[in-house]
Image (cartoon, rainbow, N blue to C red):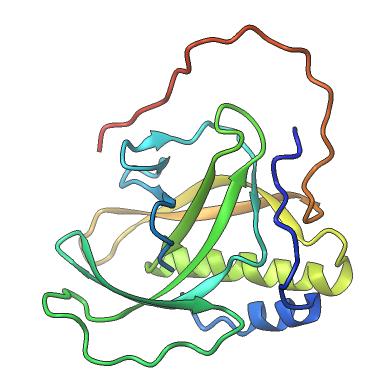
Length: 213
């Protein structure tokens, strides 16, 4: 692994404040313009970006503990009609009427940023965000693990996770439902993992994994 993760803590809240904010998450995330989203497709595969690039099996991702946001989004026919997201250190935003056309009104959402530190996607920065019960549960559980880590081992508050999923059959007739799983494999500092010497390799045309959606 190379040191591609350097989140830095300048002008960020103290670790104790981070832990308190993470534990106070109610449930909730939209990304800044231009940021690619990580998501799970309907078959339980992890993909990202408009081209639905498949995440490499076994890849490792460092989660920025300071990137967690919460709030509300409104969707209509596959289009985001409204977003009110704030850092978890701030109270949830006030809500007015949902935008016209919002199919389910305002929905709670949690989001955070990840950076790949191994494999073909190394150096890729993404945002995960979800409104489903499974997404909120997985994000909240990860936040609680980070909060405990900050309290006990503040020098290494960054979880390195692998991506997987589990599933169940909906009792409401929606078929098989897939839920995200973020499995913590190790913990690193905000400066990222120490670089390991790697022998130079000849450049090759990149081959990207695609998945039809």
